[in-house]
Length: 259
Image (cartoon, rainbow, N blue to C red; front, side, top):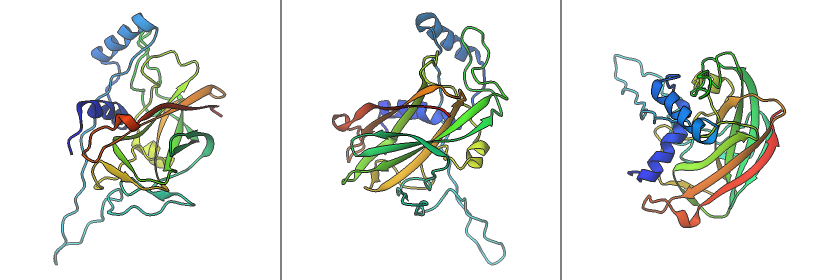
């Protein structure tokens, strides 16, 4: 189903975290500098990732069947504990220590602080005043994981935007959100999904059943003891794939501190 212009734009902003972008391109620095001159901070620009598919060749009598892509399954297994993975999602994970819970209208997001790692590369954005990376290779970055559960009694239709969560330190000086690095190996090491979607799974609108969950995470600069706010937004879908703004909610927050 084809996404609307609005849905496509927001999805491209969300999915940019999973793909490496060149650092300090002329256009990026110029865009960040422009934001700095007007509001005292940088504003990131992202590009969408290509669609990824995985198809295993059929076996015959003369060759061995290759192993299937581990991320491509027709039905995701139940998650550990009481969490059950939604039909459209990768197997839900819940590593780390819970540090916050965001309560929405029939939707709950549990936020877990997973671990601190060294950045394996520079981040996506530069400080507009110094042109130095906001996250430099070797800096400490912290991973958080979001476990999103339909806690209501009704099925919810979701667009490609799913349920969006953003994190921001109270003293974060830049516009456009927090910087991050894209390193799939680090996500796998910490058992955090870099995206919630199940590769080869159903297409939007996704039927999100009551009592089921999906999970995904992100990383950003580690500031131990800093106050941080997590904000949840949801714009569900209509049955024909349009955004259902009448039943949307936004700016549902929970504030805590990074340990």
